[in-house]
Length: 124
Image 1 (cartoon, rainbow, N blue to C red):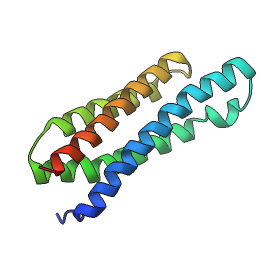
Image 2: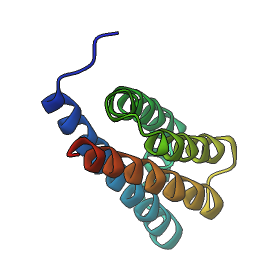
Image 3: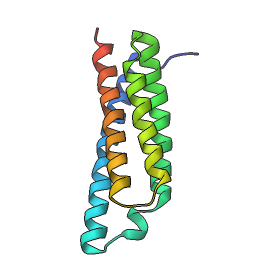
């Protein structure tokens, strides 16, 4: 399997961190807008957004975290990223609401931390 170039991996890790942050903002913002103001429920809480987001997280995570582990040999980012993705999948299985948001935010925090570890290990 051919690995992505170091520059591409670094950019994808940074993209993974940014997407994780945007996901957390989406979760909190959706709860506030829908719960407090009753706005945007059909669009913000659409299962399609969460499914596509998870698919993107898996794709970017597999490319960057997997390639990083292959390069630096440290399994920690892969384990942490896997836990994060599992939490995100668990969030998709339940009903919309606070529990889903908490699982998703915990999951994206783990995935973002895995990308950060990958970036740190890359520099050694």
